[in-house]
Length: 188
Image (cartoon, rainbow, N blue to C red; front, top):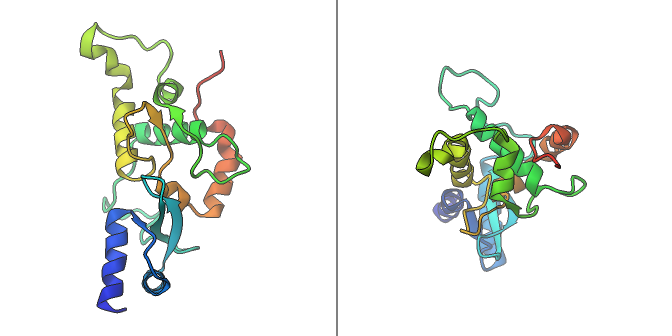
C-alpha cells in the first residue's frame, strides 16, 4: 500500500464519513487500501446530504476480540446506551423490509418516552426534573459521538448514523427478527 493510499484510508477512518473522492483512480486506491486491511467502503450520505464513504469492516470479518473476554481491553456499552440504541432504531426504522439506514427522523422526546417509565417522578422543579431522563440523554450523546446516530441538528429529532449503514446483513436480519422486542413508545 502506497503512502498516499495509507493516508487516504487513515483520513477516511478518522473523519468517519468522507466525500466521495474526485477521480476514479483515487477511489480505486482508497478501495484497494481498505481491502488490504480487511475493510470495505460503504456509500452513505454525509452530514450535508452529499454522497460520502464510510470505512467499515469487510464482509464476514469480525474485529479482533469480538465476543471474547479479554480482561477489560474493551469497554462494554452501558444498559442505558443499549436501550437508547434499541429505542432509536425502533423509532427511526419504520419499515423492516428496507435497510435501517437512513431510516426516518424521530422526535427525541418520543424516543426518550420509550425508555423512561411513564410514572417516573421528579424530585423537585428545576434541573432535577430531568433526572429520570439524564442517563438516556447522555446515551444519545454517546451514540451520536460513535456514529450510531447522526449529529444533533438542534431540531429535537433523532436520526440513524452512518455506522448503521455498515451493519452486516446477518446482523440486520437478526434485528428484523427481534424488532418487536425493541423498546418503543406504547400507543395510548
